[in-house]
Image 1: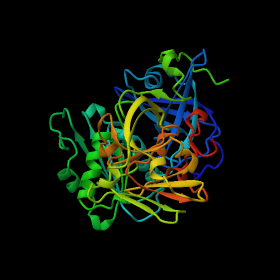
Image 2: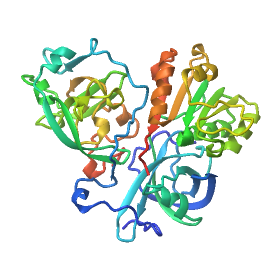
Image 3: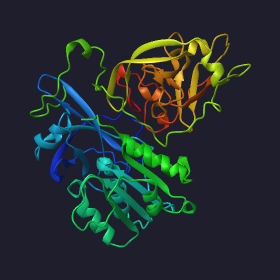
Amino acid sequence: MARTAVLGRLNWQLGNVAELVQETPRVASLVFDVPAWPGHLAGQHVDVRLTADDGYQAERSYSIASAPEDPRLAITVERLDDGEVSPYLVGEVRKGDKIELRGPIGGYFVWRGGDDRPLLLVAGGSGIVPLMAMIRHRTAGKSTTATKLLYSSRSEDDIIYKAELDALAAVGDGLTVAHCLTRTQPPGWRGYARRIDRAMLEEVAWPKAQNPIIFVCGPTPMVEAVAGHLVDMGFDAASIKTERFGPTGG
Amino acid sequence: MSFISRGFRGKRRDTASSSRVPPGQYVVNDFPVLSAGPTPRVALSEWTFVVEGEIDEPKKWTWEEFRKLPAEEVTKDIHCVTKWTKLDTAWKGVSVDTILEGVETAAEFVMAFSYGGYTTNLPLEDVTGGKAWVAYEFDGQPLHPQHGGPARLLVPHLYFWKSAKWVRGLRLLKEDQPGFWESNGYNMYGDPWREQRYWGD
């Protein structure tokens, strides 16, 4: 089992890049073997540190994409063309490279599983990553926690983990996935074709009486809007956990 | 010596500002938003600020009263534990020295507490002596709710999670207690220059 708390110092350690998965044209997953990984909870992140040959360093935090049960640690990174770290991780890194990692980090935006409350997950773009760790944890733990994912992407090609989500939703064990595409939709698209709004949340969300645990992750304007609508709809603010990323990052 | 990342060059910053950027941080020009839940909605007519705990007579201000306290304009660099640093941010607010004027206390720590339930702990000496403010303007404008308005604590020499958004009071404490992020893996003190991000740093 994953440890819930790491009391000592989190030390930098080397992860070996075991696999690279191109998820969309701009997004890739890096799958690491990390020999002394202490375990993590679904929703936590990890720090990455890169060092140039003259000693110059850059650090960034990335959400962990893999389930706690997975023997390998995965992050999923969106390449930002003007970024510093993401163009290296998505483009430069090859299988067999080593990357310095430190984690796991964060003890609030986490889902441990094992309770009866249904889950409502709302993602925008690469905000899906920590929520995917929760979905994978749910599957790996054979949980049947009733779970709804509402996932907003720009176009069909930008949907991260699309095949895996389709397959998991087809199992019929209580996971449903609703997509919305905000910019372009393929012919015959049957999902939503606009930004997430209150009407959409009212169609997708669990009734208030079921007291869902809610996780929202995406760009700041989307998270602000979604969390605001959910409060307006009467959900308990303390049950709405948010994580935001802005245009910066890199 | 750290492991060298094959082929990594990075984007070098100019040397003039690099002495102002703590280890592991990078400079941003925008103002990212981070918070753990929905942005609380606080009507100014309902807003109050209190000082309580180890104090004989708790203090309390309404918004109108608080805005009559002498204010200061300060320009500071801020450092978020998620790695971004923003240089030369311009704030207006009331020094915590002004808020605590005349207070006699045996406390050595404070817990800042906020609308929405957020808390963060600080040593008293880190919020006094011209080191901390309760700020209500950013860049000459009322502080936007997503950045902590109506008012947020501003403690620029520590990681920015210590600068509690939507702050509504300070609790004076004899002993240190962890606040919200300090209970969730983050450092009790949070000095960016010593890279005290997490437990054990």
